[in-house]
Length: 166
Picture 1 (cartoon, one colour):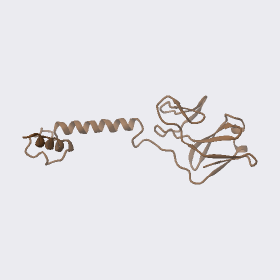
Picture 2 (cartoon, one colour):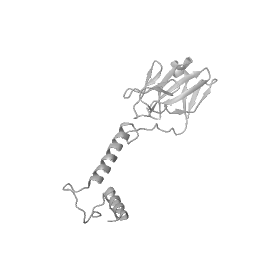
Picture 3 (cartoon, rainbow, N blue to C red):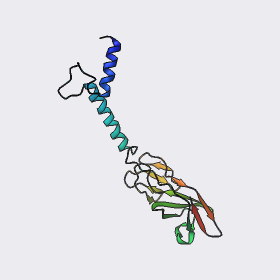
């Protein structure tokens, strides 16, 4: 067999194509060593991705359709700078944070790692499942490595005493 024929046989073995290996002796298990190793490597990679939240268990924050208005009078925790109000917008958990006297940020409380709902902690937010930590602005600061919490545009109407999210 010349080198080109060996390469062709090796490529067929890697694909696991049944019948492509006709004429070659196969182990009693029915798959060749290379196919077994290739499939094992794929399974290990898939397991690693799922464990890291890149697989099907990862949850993206829901997108908002339209806007939602929140009355400051309904959220007493937002009366002072640094205040955090936990709200539900379009059936999804959010946090609204007062950054300064006229600036607010709306954050999805869905952890970008694997979709758990984060809780308020002394320094901002904490994922109860994986220990990811976020500051009050939603930026990842420690624990399980992940991206920051998803934030949404807000506008503040001081006269009406409302915050519009979305």
